[in-house]
Length: 91
Image: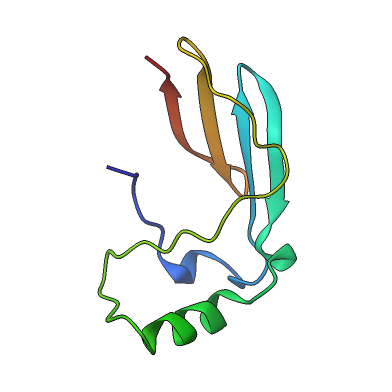
């Protein structure tokens, strides 16, 4: 399971959603969808030309700066806007 989905209506604009990842209490990634090369709706439109997308499908687009190795016992917390959306301990 990836996590709970947030309705599009939760956000003022999907073209400017901030998100970040903390690893062991330190921010390792922080960015916004406004920095993406293509807007989310443009990606969905383009992908839909080649694949049938259904509710619940996930599109992976890459990652912002800050990619690093994750080790056993690391604690990760993910945030969308100011809301924590997950917290895990790596096994």
